[in-house]
Image (tube, rainbow, N blue to C red; front, top):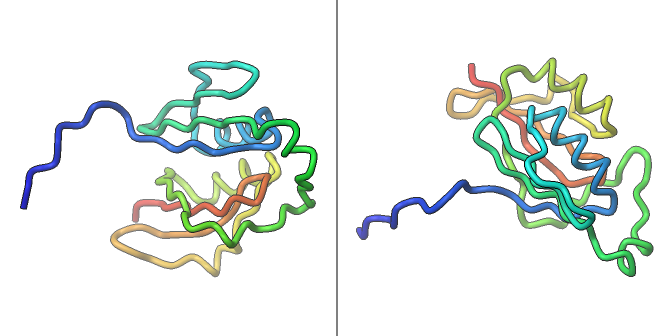
Length: 133
């Protein structure tokens, strides 16, 4: 088996958003990230080993997107980002305060030394959060 090439930088996630401000606030509060770069088109958020770029959907497309309250889950996505957090109960407060949603505590499961729970951000992107046991 070939050895992987050396890491060139920090791995991350790019999320396209109707509201950069609202989605950035969600990731800042839930993951403890800080704004490293801010422009009209995007915000680069970093912290706790994560890099998240919240990028604006072009206005001509964003006008067509309706975000329900609570957000409709985007279940047709082929990906589900997963984040390790210190405390799922504390996370719930941040998720709800910023317009996201987290499944009830009784729906959590354990996997590879973590308690795992799914939820979504304010635009309906499905996420997974894990707390080390």
